Image (cartoon, rainbow, N blue to C red; front, side):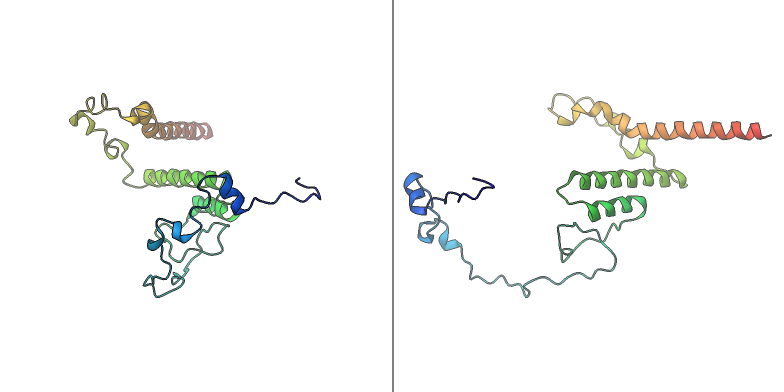
Length: 192
């Protein structure tokens, strides 16, 4: 019994299990294993190392708290930066990969990075163009109705919301900019 001084029952022996369950332990004896001749452990892999050389750590990298050190080789193409990087660092420093908070923080960091990229794009001289970059204009030339219906496409279930997700943030940004501009103009007129 759990949490008492009583001794727990011992597991049945191999002979008892073999007598009770047909085929139990068939893979214990190598002679009975169908793949035994192919299962050789004396083969040499050809590797010149027991543990691969470690890539030098030039800057601080995110590493899950479950792991003692970084993998021997890791990517450095997208270093963490700004607010989104701080959010991702928090996810790796405080939460295990088995916790929902870890993954939710990574998703939030991704969204913050995407919003920051959109803001930088709007502030640049060449902002993103959602009409041409999403391929909406090529739809009318490529049989848009025939390609969508009658083929069992799974993405048709959410196709109605795609325009909202693509154009919605742009409309929200435009409305926010309009409201802010109107308030600034009213404030400037009131100060005169």
